Figure 1 (cartoon, rainbow, N blue to C red):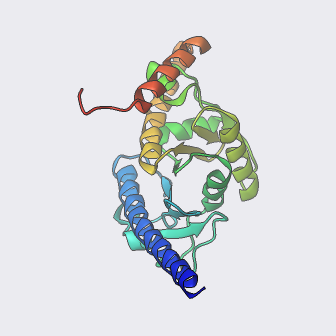
Figure 2 (cartoon, rainbow, N blue to C red; figure 1 turned 90 degrees about the vertical axis):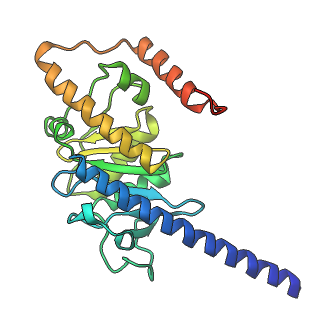
Amino acid sequence: MARTEDALQREQYVRGVKTEVAIARTRAEVASLSAELVHGGYAGWGGGDVSARVAGSDLFVIKPPAGDHDDLAPENAIVCDHDGSPLSGTPGSERLPASDVAVHARIYRDVPGVRGVVRSQAPHTLVHAATGEGIPCLLVAMAERFGGGIPVVSPPLDDSDAVATAVSDTLAAGSAPAVIVAGDGAYVTGSTAREAVESARLLEQMARVAVLASAAEPAPLPASTVELLNDAFQTRITQPTDGRR
């Protein structure tokens, strides 16, 4: 029995160490990606909230509320459980997380495969949020990456649970990795936090194209073409490589 207890204690210790290492890595990643969004002009009015799931756990790391997040130190990032509550006793837990933490938490709980989330308040993305309109699929790049247009939801913005439900339900039900919240901004997801940031950048570019093209009555790509382009793109990025170009 003693040996079994010793083995269990060792397993728990190793698991704890691995989680601590994973948290440290995720903190650094969130700090770095937050700075990238700010320096790239994709985070307006304190937006650009980035979060990333901690590997091997039911935790995620999110930046603090609006402020000098271009100088965000990893130790200031906040570790949360999947209810969006800061993990007591960890650095940064005395601070409140970003105001949209409930939405990030719900996405991680309800949308399989998501490992990173960005709340984008980039300028042209905000145009679509302000008008309450989704972003049509006008170009090959959008068809490949997103598999179609980006939908819009209009929950009451003073009800964080309603926002979280509307966003997570839309993401879970559709093929698009992003959703626009009318009057607020967009939530963009990825299989990694880096992918979420890259998709947020492309989303802003496609939002700008849609705004500029709206005066010329743009023609969305046919659904069959979008499906073929997206399938081909997903096949390319999931195929193993042997190191050759």
